[in-house]
Length: 427
Ligand SMILES: Nc1nc2c(ncn2[C@@H]2O[C@H](COP(=O)(O)OP(=O)(O)OP(=O)(O)O)[C@@H](O)[C@H]2O)c(=O)[nH]1
Ligand SMILES: [Mg+2]
Image (cartoon, rainbow, N blue to C red; front, side, top):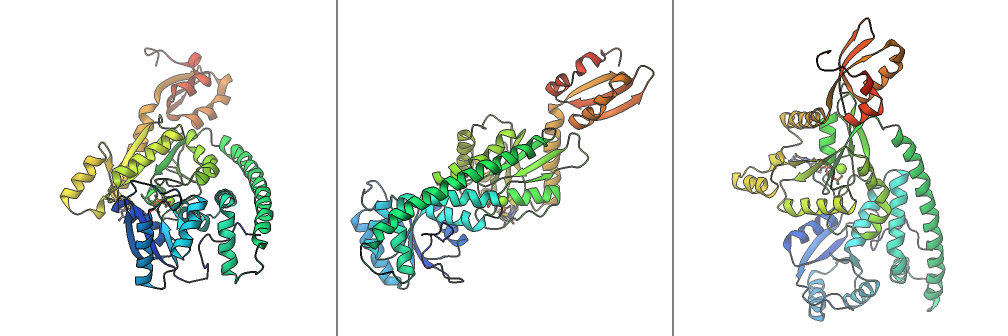
């Protein structure tokens, strides 16, 4: 049986650097990103080929002339382990290209799924990635089966593969249903945790992968969440308190980064993690201002937020990594491409203070000022005032306890504070 934990890469030998040729489409910029994905996997790019895809060939995606050109490049370089295509290839195209090139072929979805698979740390993300990997593998079993058989030195007998693939297909489907059940159980557990966080204000950090979300979370909360110059360093949501003294507490939630053309299998299995965003009171959208692709990356993030149905949430946009741009012209271009954003560097202390104040002020302005006189018979409400609002003044008086606090209007009404509210002249 093909193990779902098995690498999608050819020759998964420990410590070996894979030498690859990468094939991109239309644009240099997107090819650079694809190359970073391959670097994250520890592969070395020996050659880059850009293809114009006005006509897509159903059999091989690229035309025959291009197949020949890639084969020539392979011969020129020698010793190349695989060819990676920055596009999702159908199982048939994968097979035909491999035949035509005489080398293992990887596509964009395979590369991204493989990165996720290596970076998954918790039970939840491991389960999600395994499910996505199997979903991706299922229609491609024939292809990968021969692929792995070859690596293991081959098992021999012709025709045996077909039968084995049928058996594998059934096993894969069974495994997928076990994983789905496991995810449902994990989600239930998480719902319980979530309901415990009802009284806090949640700020979700969102943005393109590698924009600096985890770094910013660490700077804002003095934490040590993994932040690395790798794509998809974060796969699990971490929650940290922004300021232990703010009432109600404000928490920051780090989330998985987005990327252009995220494989559908991953979107499907990470949906529940991404749905955390529905619970957020504010989205902090972080854009890598040092990237030439800042505008495109912002648009991809906006598109995903829309697909998730959270594009209506209040948003603060931050243009990050500005310390990396010394050139004034480039700085200006970055600023114009993301108008209205606060410009920061996650490594600069003043900028962190500014960001923190922006968040605190946002919530402060959202809150209404309430002055109430709680009779002593209602003193059990006191803990709710502290949990759901920010109490500025408290005084014990003859009729009861006087509170001046800031609280969301809806929450005040839910607590039934209306009938204790003082008119302006009484206060
Ligand atoms: N120079 C500079 N580097 C930064 C800044 N912010 C983040 N970085 C670096 O950018 C890289 C990516 O940062 P992360 O915080 O891991 O990015 P992320 O958005 O969490 O990425 P994923 O979790 O992969 O989606 C790391 O090497 C950081 O040190 C910044 O303001 N300036
Ligand atoms: Mg991160």
